Length: 339
Image 1: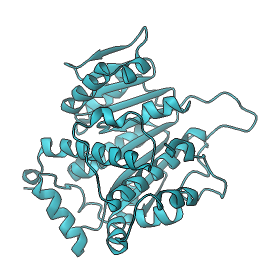
Image 2 (image 1 turned 60 degrees about the vertical axis):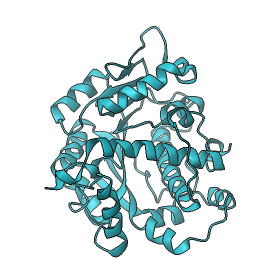
Image 3 (image 1 turned 180 degrees about the vertical axis):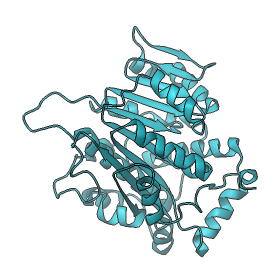
């Protein structure tokens, strides 16, 4: 019954919405992204509350990613230890190209999505010298028909994430090393899958990567008035949140990971993330960009989205990873945000 409320093409179209929202933020000066415009056919001007909400999501993601990339580096080390990133349901995300520009790209960056999405992304990469030139080399290839991009340090590959044996094969084909520190990204992805599939992916990731961080961004609290309306709005577009009732609260998000092999997990709603984790200096900067008076709606909206991160730490390098990391800044991300 739940499946009938979910339309695969409609869920994939949320990727276009996300890209348009990101471009709206970029145009207003919330953050820097020299590539997202290549993926947006019809630019839209989002409202200030959507811009601020998208910025808070992006800033939290980039700050946790920065902590991961810095982990395991001692003060007397100059060489960056090998790390890898696995993006599940990557859509048109451009993080790899941004990290490349910033000199922070990992040893390997792998993006997975449905073939319909990866074929479109491969076509944009092939037709844009701005992107193509960054990945082309002796061992690189682009196939729009196959929906894949292969290069030494970046791979874009098609897979249905619900098919765990196929997922395992694709990750192996991509050359991911289970022993390397791995950052796994799932932004509004697992929640569109059925609960069994979501659990299976989380469990597979824990069994596969012994030193890893799993970054999850998705909706919570479907049962109050705001949450109920959120569900109705999404279902009317064919985008049912098939897993939200299985993990409707912050505690349930943490349990999703702890019951599927992860050593620790922490979930905060986006109101707390914005208030206590996003850099104060950055908040001051972006809060001057647009007139903003939607405070009541902002609080409600942010309380219905959350970031959960889970950690496996076989190598012992993530001791201080997370929201409550010491007072020192993990990374000056203002350089990545300033236009």
